[in-house]
Amino acid sequence: MRRFAILVLAAVAILLLGLGLRPEPAQAYAENDTLARRKAVAAAVKVVKDARKKPAGDAETLKAIAEARAALDPWADSIRNAYWGGKAADRDAAFGKVWNEILTVASFHGKKVKARYILAKTPIIWKRYLVGLPVGGKWMTSYEGSGKVSSQLNMFIRQERPGGVLLREIKIWTYSWNTVYSGVGGENSKKLAKVMHEVDRDSVARKGRKASKGVKARRLNKEMKRVYYYFVEGLNVGAEAHLRRQSFYFKGEHAYTYCFEVITHLDPVKSDDRVTTWQTEADRREFDAVMASLVPNPDYVWK
Image (cartoon, rainbow, N blue to C red; front, side, top):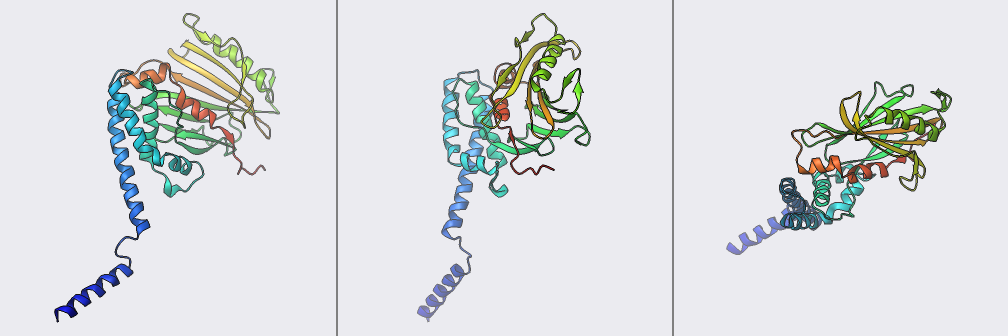
């Protein structure tokens, strides 16, 4: 009788396994992998929080940052790919946020960082272009009005400080090729940049003013090989605020020239920590990563 009961129990166990009530090896691996990733993210969040409080170059902090990043490394590439054309199910906002913050605080503490930010592919300018915005909730887009083709100021991209106050704003302007703007044809991106360079320079008080000597051609990436750039920095008389204004002009396809007018608010905010102050004054790696990601949208159907 006892032997019979043991046989019955064994049969039931085999049946339950066959019904999938016990995780398959692949499922068990996926669950363990997810738990390990969440653990690494939670530990990195604490490291970032502490790193923001410490003075730049703190040795113990650098060690903790290196360990936190090493723990996150196994998932970085796959999650980065998931945000740029991959499966939405493979994305992890918490991971993307802390990965980007780890890179930022590592740079603040003096570590040369070659790793790339995790950027979310974002359609802009009537979906004609794509740009990558750092995952983490501090970057966002909005359209001016309805965002229709007729609006010269097309849209905004905003970056907030940790406390929610505006740090940087990108205004995207459109210039029609069949329209003349202050004597300059909309197809002439270089001359438009030269005219606006003078306007922006004159809007800043001379005392303490910094400005590029002229307009220079720059390469953003292999698909954006010629962009006309200038910057002006100082006390903006109209806004009564210290601003850094950078402008990127380029001739697009199908009847439009575009300008990315980047305005960084330099005046400190009470909620700024050490890292935010440094980002405002000196660091532009995150912003540079955004601009370097700008490409034409290969899936856009021109009408």
